Structure formats: C-alpha cells, structure tokens
Length: 267
Ligand code: T3D
View 1 (cartoon, rainbow, N blue to C red):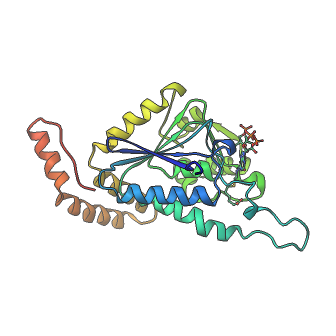
View 2: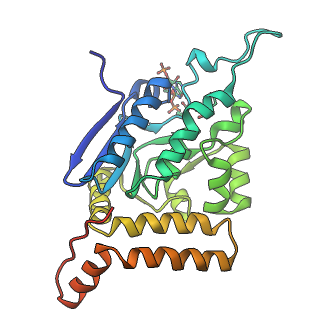
View 3: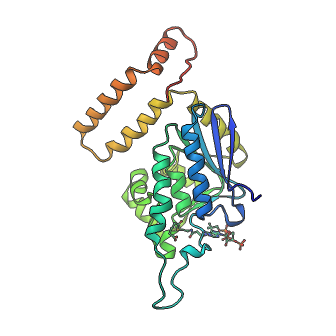
C-alpha cells in the first residue's frame, strides 16, 4: 500500500498533520489535496482535538502547486488547449482555505523549511505561524506568470500592508523566517532544533485555552477588516453575549476566583 501523503499524530489534544511528499518538497497534487482536506475534516469533527498543527516532512514545508502534475501543464503549442487553472483553484485551493479558516479549533503552521507559492499562503492562513530560523517564504507565483492565490491577495496586505505585500508578490524574493517575523508576516521564528518542541508547547497552550473564544476571536478579527466600527462593535456584542452563556466563561471566572487551573471544554 502506498504511504499516506498526510501523516497524522496526536499528542494529548493536539493533532499534528504532516505533509508527506518530501521528494517534491511537499508540493500539492490532487491526492495530497484530497488527503489534507479529509484530515482537516476529521480533526474538525473529533471533539477531543483542541488544536491542529500543520507541518512538512523533510526539508520543506511545501513548494506549492506540483508543477510536474500533467493537469497543470501549460499548452504545449500555439492553439493547444491550455489548462483551466481556475477550475483547479475552485476544486482544491478554495475549499482548502475555507476549511482552514473555519476550523473549530486554533491552527498552527510549523514552517520547517521553504514555503513557496500556495505552500506559503497555506501556512499564512493558519492562526499562528511559527517557523524554523532557516525556513523561508516565497511568493513564487509571479515568477511563473501567476498571481498570489490560496488567499494571498487577501492575506498579504492585511498581514504586512500594501507596500510590503506588493514587494513580496511582485519580486518573489525569498524572505528568510527572521525577516518574516520582523515585518509581522508570521508570529515568531525559533532556532531550527527547537521547532518541534516550541510548536508543541505553543499548540498545547492554545489547546488548554477556551478554544471556542479563540475561534470567535479569529472570526471577529477577520470580519472587522471588512465592516465599519459600528458593525464591528455589534459583532463583538453578539459574540460576547453567546460566549457569556457558555461553560468556558463560568469555568474561567470561577477558576480565577478559586485560584485554580481552569478546565475549558467548549468547542
Ligand atoms: O500553477 C497552478 O497550477 C495554479 C496554482 C498555483 C499555486 C502555486 O503554488 S504556484 C507556485 C508553484 N511553486 C513554485 O513555483 C515553486 C517552485 N519551486 C522552487 O522555486 C524551488 O524548488 C524552491 C525555492 C521551493 C526550493 O528550491 P531548492 O533549490 O531548495 O530545491 P529544488 O532543487 O528546486 O527542488 C528540489 C526538488 O523538488 C526538485 O526535484 P528533483 O530535481 O530533486 O527531482 C524539484 O523539481 C522539486 N520541486 C520543487 N518545487 C516543486 C517541485 N516539484 C514539483 N512542483 C514544485 N512546485
């Protein structure tokens, strides 16, 4: 039987998903897309999972679209039928981004090496991005005549502002992880050898927190980029009302008063 393209392992309530096509730098073909989407669906449905970590096997996080996939081969001669890249995005990349951004638990990208094209934007769609010091981010799309997809045009200016978004996307230069941290593209970078342990610490910390509130925080912050202040205040009111009725709010306040560690369970 062929080896799974997405390796899954649990440490307590943290589920780690590892992209596993190291020979082609974990680039995405249809099978990897299908397996990753299924793995994310399973994690979302499993009540015991309270944080999901995405990482890559081998020396890369992901080099984005598998450019050797016959399905994306450019027209071989004038007049030959070109590939429908829009269909590819509709079928695979769009559902992947929407799945990630609607996960009912926090998501962490542990960027272990180069993250290029859709691979970079896959990582940047996670709630918290931690990277090894030797990792890098490349908006490689422009070099092959494309625009940043996988949510890149939406994400990049929100993360680093228009000037840096355009610089990264138009030039397609390799951005080392320490610079990615400096300009606010990612949360932080850590020495290479510390990435697994630091990732687990971070993920376990998130998993022990009131994850329903954290996921609501993601939603409200994303929404607030699109609405005016009145609407954002209203969204905060509604969300806080709902969270105030939950178990985690009582547990958090009671634990504070009783000077004990809270046990959060809402999802
Ligand atoms: O196009 C569409 O279908 C629409 C969707 C677009 C989404 C996208 O993601 S577009 C962007 C696609 N990705 C890229 O353009 C990145 C291409 N790769 C690179 O630029 C470089 O490989 C890296 C900068 C990522 C790493 O460079 P380096 O020197 O460390 O490694 P390498 O030697 O280039 O690659 C190692 C192997 O991985 C090599 O195979 P080999 O020779 O050992 O058999 C290389 O061909 C393979 N590889 C790397 N990236 C891809 C890939 N194979 C298929 N697809 C790749 N994207």
